[in-house]
Length: 275
Image (cartoon, rainbow, N blue to C red):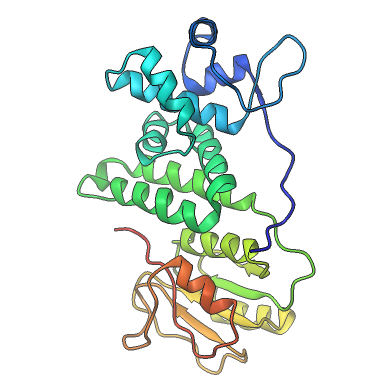
C-alpha cells in the first residue's frame, strides 16, 4: 500500500493535555514524578510535550484507574498497549470530549490505517451508541460521527492519481460517514476520490459527472431509492441498505476498496452503517 507522506506531528503542552484529559495539572505532574511515564513525542527544553499516542495512553490510564486498577498498574498497562480500544474512545465521547476523541482516532489511523480503524474502532463504537438506547444518546452519536469525520478528513488525497471516483449520497440522504471512510481508504490506496456530500439531486450529479469525467460513481442510500438511469460512467456502484435488491454487494469497507481499485466491472459494494 502506497501511503502519502505523513503530516507534521501535532503535540500539546502539559496544560493542554491536562485539559483534554479532564485532569488537574497537578495530577498529571504527579503521575510523571511517580511512574516515570515514557512519552513518545520529542522533548525539547524544560517543558513536557505530548503527542497523540501519549494522550491516548494517558486516557487509557485514566480509564483503567476508573475501573479500579491502582495508578501504578494502570500506568504500566496503558503505556505498554498503545492502541486505542473502543471503551477508551467511548469514555471520551460520553464525556463530550470530542477533540480528545478525534485525537485518539488520529493516533489509531496512524497505526492501523483507515481500514483497520474503521473495522476495529469506528464501527464497534457507533454500533454501541446506536443500540437500544440510541434515542437517549443522539448527542453522543453526532459527537462521535463528527470526530470520525474530522480524523478522516486529515487523510490527504493521493498525488498524481488517475481519474477520480465520484462519491455522493442520493437526493434526501443525510448519512455521509460511510462515504467519508471510503474516500479516506481509497486515498490510502492511491486512488483519488471526490466526495460531493449529502443529498445530491440527480441534476447536480450529472453536472458533476460532466465536469469530472470520473472512473466510477458511488451512490449511497440508507433507504430504498430508485437509481438514476443512463449515468454515463464506466462503473456505477449502488451502495448502502437502500440499494435495489439483487444487486450483490460486499458488506465491508475492505471489499469496497478492493472493488474500486481493480478493473473489474459491475461492482456493487459498501459497508453498511450500524443500526
